[in-house]
Length: 253
Image (cartoon, rainbow, N blue to C red; front, top):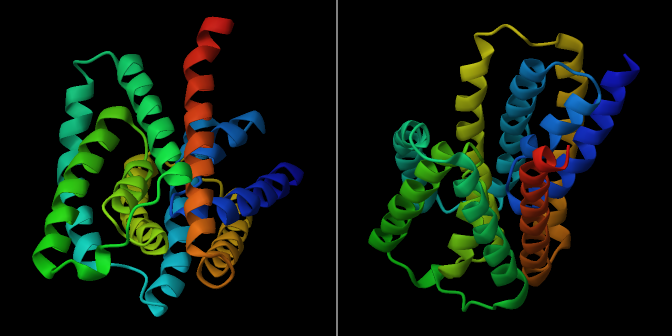
């Protein structure tokens, strides 16, 4: 039980931070759960479900404050869901490590844009066709890359939306809504294995919900546009560093 309580506290901390950027915490929680001796399939299915739970609660506040750009979020969701399996099939025929290194380069580039590049806000000027068009384009690339690399498409969606001129808060909130369904889809793929631990799930769900509520509150009410943008950039760097470590670890052992 102590292990599950530790997992719940860690879930709360990382969910709070990553909710600000609109990305799920599963990519960090899975290796941490493994370090706590939680079985792999249990760690994966639990972390993915926690992603969905956290983003549901975060999205409620975002929707209330009208931060979710629905005309972009829905096309992203639909197209990403359709193209993710295609990316997964392509991955069977390509060297995955090379693709992951390319994605690391993209994350570092995107993080640098968040930290050092100031795009002019344009989203309010976009008409319905442009908002939908951007959603289709971003969703297509995010879905395909997510399936291809086996990583969350949200890492791609947030910086691209900001680069397109979206307010960082709206980019984060829009991505958080999409993550609900992408994570739920991944969870359902693992759920059939029956490797859920009810106590781990209940305790971590409490941490996930609390972290999502705190993180979304900080993003909506306490942080400026510039601070949100900086937080997203730092988080993208952290994701890139974790991926670099995962890629280098087999070479160091």
